[in-house]
Amino acid sequence: MKINIVYWSGTGNTEAMANLIKEGAQGKGAAVTLKNVSEASAADLNCDVLVLGCPSMGVETLEESEFEPYIQSIETQVTGKKIALFGSYGWGDGEWMREWSERMENAGATLAVESLIVNDAPSGGSADECRAFGALIAG
Ligand SMILES: Cc1cc2nc3c(=O)[nH]c(=O)nc-3n(C[C@H](O)[C@H](O)[C@H](O)COP(=O)(O)O)c2cc1C
Image (tube, rainbow, N blue to C red; front, top):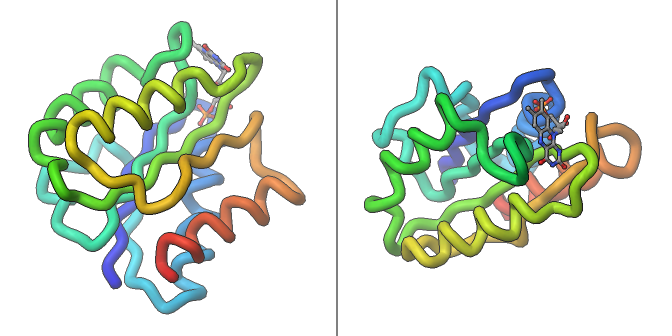
């Protein structure tokens, strides 16, 4: 199984999640590619599951300068595609992730697993959740 992970991270929390998710998926034998969104293109849709990570920014939005344009660039190509979403947040209640999940489903994508949110940096139980998320995607 081939899994591509594409993420944006300002202060490293979503990046830490991405690395843990990679670890969990590799533990299940998946071939995992991890990319910062600045290096990604629509060609990264060429995999079994595209895993997308972005923290809650703005007011419960995706990061606007790099990640939102990337999502717009793939949004018309995700019909029938398996994807999974994750990201870190601060003081909110996960609204950005609920909206993002609904948006991708409305675009025709299938969420392979329930979207994963972690408050601030993953550690302890939330780090385990990230590894389990990766394992579940690969499983
Ligand atoms: C400009 C800015 C806007 C943010 N807006 C929200 C928000 O609307 N809701 C929320 O829960 N957290 C918000 N946060 C907090 C980040 O989501 C949180 O710090 C997260 O851990 C950052 O992840 P990162 O280290 O991957 O960049 C915001 C942070 C910044 C810098």
